Length: 473
Ligand SMILES: Cc1cc2nc3c(=O)[nH]c(=O)nc-3n(C[C@H](O)[C@H](O)[C@H](O)COP(=O)(O)OP(=O)(O)OC[C@H]3O[C@@H](n4cnc5c(N)ncnc54)[C@H](O)[C@@H]3O)c2cc1C
Image (tube, rainbow, N blue to C red):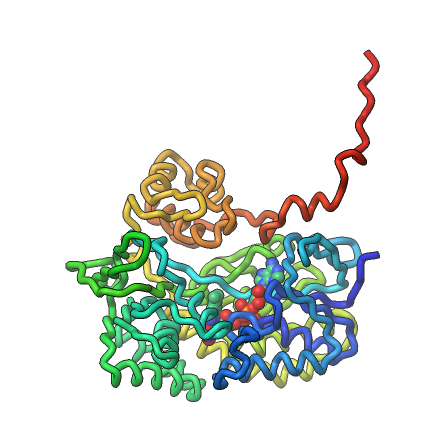
């Protein structure tokens, strides 16, 4: 029989884990599911067994505390569990899972979706060369395995993550050949008033930049990576100055390096919420397309709640409080009284969200950055589709991401469009002189994550298959 709980939470990052803990404290049965083996999400990712004794960092300490709180709670945890389909029923939700190579189902009266974000990388010539990593993705290497991207790394991207990654590489003994960021110093100065809402985080960021400057690492403000050279491995990184709209202007220069961390902001992972029936809206100040939600994670779909970066990029500090608010709201939906607890949390949430949104504003790519994608650049890496091929499809009348997907398979590969769909949407908007708000991502379809056919088919012996008798003539 399929297990039936009060609340299922998808995503055990700061948002989902805190939602589960908050709801569980009100006596409800809660199951927390995540495809990672241990809770913590992206920012508080757990360490592998080999590096458990490494010196503590703010992220490892926060993640350790969260895992301890979950351990001491009544929350049931399902790690290494991928949710690949979500169905709404008369009395709640059915989640289709992939666990240990098998498919399973779990039922819940209410559902909290906290699936976080993924990063956007503006495709440039050579970005698929081995040795190029996502900027946010590189943080997983440090946190989980204390591994460096290479011997000599260029770190490039928007917002605060570029300085965090560069500072971490240096802390772990690596060499940073240069930092390249589309943001100008003026962008950071304009963000200062909002950053003062969290002086602790502001100070931490200032230390990263000071460390790089004292070490003589060149920081190229208002520049972007324009090419990656190397035969089978990164050998050099080309970069160009940008204008105010981040269009490349001026000549390319180069830096010798064996690795590159490259990223241009985070995008809410909206597919699970969309599959559960929530409409999307375009909110550039929160990372672009995101599922529509109301106060404390409530949605228009009864029994469905959303929190964390998947409902708008506000950063880890806000995700944690957002998760608590949403878990409490879900508990209230099932009869608990949580209104006063939520009212007490909201001012803290507003402060953290203000800081996070200032970082999102710094991280969001401006329009001109898309010009770095040349006709020869691979845009859809699963299907090896270049910018030129996609541009021709758009010129032939494919005016939506769904149309480009059906025509060329861009987004039908193993990544399910997670790498290319934003770049394709931006290409359509630029080619047809439309706003990005007019070009939504492709319609979400199951499976949310790849599922092996063998898992769906289950174990069977061919000889046991009933063979229908021939139809009478
Ligand atoms: C790769 C990456 C690295 C980042 N590194 C940092 C960093 O170092 N510092 C920082 O301040 N911010 C970082 N961020 C931003 C940071 O993730 C968020 O601000 C914060 O973690 C948001 O918390 P969350 O709980 O909303 O999402 P997350 O922490 O992303 O948690 C979402 C969880 O949902 C799970 N999940 C998603 N879909 C499914 C599914 N279908 N089935 C099962 N589980 C699923 C994921 O495995 C993940 O654990 C990073 C973002 C990304 C994408």
